[in-house]
Image (cartoon, rainbow, N blue to C red; front, side, top):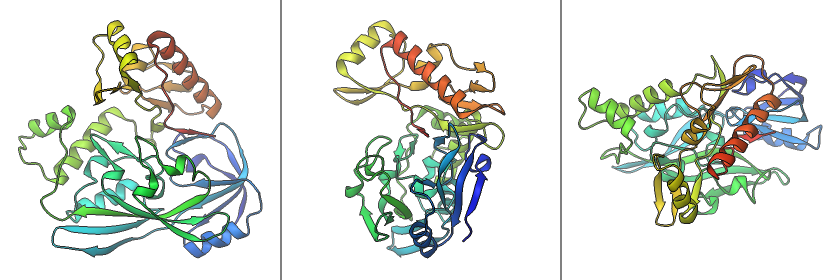
Length: 337
């Protein structure tokens, strides 16, 4: 374990923002993690995973702790199910592909989501009708102040849409070291209700898709809409899809009857943030090296040398214009530092 000073974080955030960490250390074991926490040279601590769900708006005058714990383990299994534990530093998509290669169902709709396993529960990642909480069993953590290890059950995590206890009362108090999932070995309960998935399967004449078929369809959809962060800096969806009450929804529908929506409950409706941003005229627009992707308005991009502040300024301008035009506030999904 080696502590580096003034470490560049350009290759540690998927936006490719050029900024530095005052102190930086990468840990590969839980013992190293505890040692790094007990010997921290700065009061300010910044936990870094895959760098996929954050926007850095400047240098971090902090002790950046990179969680690089690796390993995948089968904890137990029955004839129909298996409990799989993945360490926090495992790349999320690679872990999903491991599950598919072993015919373990439940995560296929979450293929190609950027980031690492350890950060996935924090915002309860989701895509195409599936959320992490659907297969989540528990996660192991280390408490930052006491260095004690603690397990959080699914109930204790308080999962909601793109939310969990780790974004609220437990924020900044624990580091997730591993996550355990309950997956199916056969009779997989697949989710193919989204039109894009159905279209790809129909084009391939697949009537009874395997989890591999679904994963490949999701990958194709995401690659057609979302730029590869290694080619064009981005953090996936920058904004959450807003969920509004019935009164707000009815007013919105009167003004925009053509808008797509999803009924969450009889009193709550989800409106695609990408549609709102496109309606506000931002899709495909570029402002210096900061911009909105041409294929998916939810994605803000760095065309090369944009600063985090420039991307955040664009995000706030989008929020303002969408609110003025539609009366709806769109909230960032990305954490801004």
